[in-house]
Length: 155
Image 1 (cartoon, helix red, strand yellow):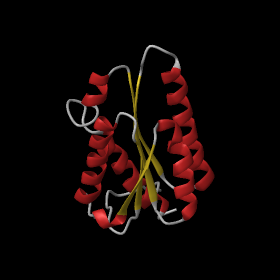
Image 2 (cartoon, one colour):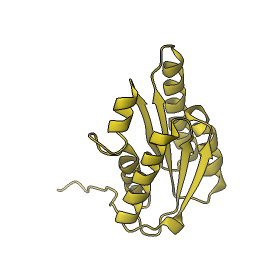
Image 3 (cartoon, helix red, strand yellow):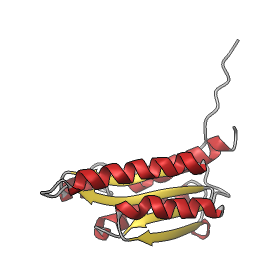
Image 4 (tube, one colour):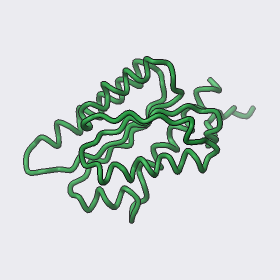
């Protein structure tokens, strides 16, 4: 007997996406947005199937993501933001709350939500993860969203 394997495919055709983007550190965040849009378009989606919601920063991402998820207008949500460690514990609080909040929204709503929030020690690491040495985490988050929607559709 062979085990049936079910997984999502990387085809963005007919998927409605919401990008929920924190504006703080936007000079890096915009590169994540560009990466996510590039990924969606390269995998058969179009810009017409993408809506973008901008909020002040990473802490607000879960609140906006939940409101967007509950609207029923989108098949997937891609959260994008940038949190860079400073000299206070503020980084740890923001990173933890944004992560937990986004995960909770995904569990509460059962809408696929991809996590594309950078949490880095310094600006150099953030730049590397927004399209230079370490790829583009916005692109990666969009790939996750595409795959999860297609997996959900098979369950």
